[in-house]
Image (spheres, helix red, strand yellow):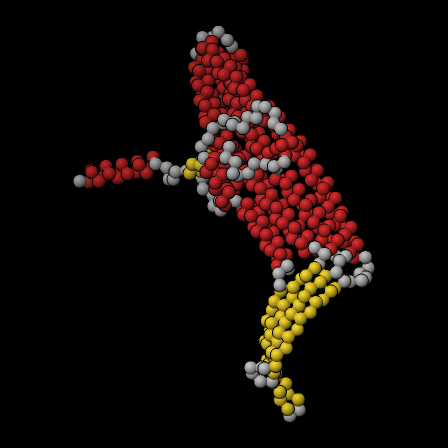
Length: 420
């Protein structure tokens, strides 16, 4: 019985040491998009900004409706030896009749402000998508870099074993052995560095997901670029749907309605009012009273205030018009630049992949030649170094292509709803 118990303990301990303490969460790109759309604080802030603008518009609309109120007054007044009570209650209301379309212009401007806030929300979504994609690609690259550096460590280990064997056989000099040892040490350092970098980019992705707490995670994906844009697109058509351009357009429209509102200041304001009241010295009061009327207000002199306000509104419109044009020009240039960068990186990936294939083939041939003494160490180690750099370069190119794709999608103004 004790032997069985001992055997059980050994098995359990072995299982405890072979099974990891926790399994890292695995996220795909659609998982990241869905989570960031739900949790990212910048997106939540942008959404609340839209809600604020909508509420501000409703505040302006309320001025077009009757403004009513009720009042109740109970008082007791003592004069000398005489004390008197007073009671009153009533309702009253006012209705705007005419204001030169001032409030109407303000409501239209508020509607454009809502549209501008909605485009700000889209812009925030495009920025979050770009940063999220960058963090996702960086973690994907970091994970792959660990694998690549492990391959390089194996290459350097095999090289060192071969050179040590030849050195001990008197077929190689000490400088070659020390070089192989240095290369092996460098490869181990790069592997350790790559593993440390994984945690950093994990934290970066955690931030872009909008998570409050850090949990180690991994991403699942590949380095396939799907947004290739082989044919040069119509940049003029793309720019029309860009959130920055639509935001500038909404601000220009709001400024135009601001001019309408400023012009309305030169017209009189006409309001109607009505009310009824009951008052008396006893409760309930029995004296009825009502009133109804129309009031007209037109300031005659304000030191040029209205003229200055109109000039200010016109200047704001011209500025918004210039800003819209500048934004369109900037977006067109950005589209051209990012499209060209995407095409360049895709072609670079193809070139680097071919260099890697050539380096791997040369390495296989050189390995056999060096083993038989057909080529010298100096020639062989150059070929091995070229292979190592080609592996790193190919990975860098693949990651750069994904980042260029993300920049192109961002330039088009695509949001978190864009699943590619």
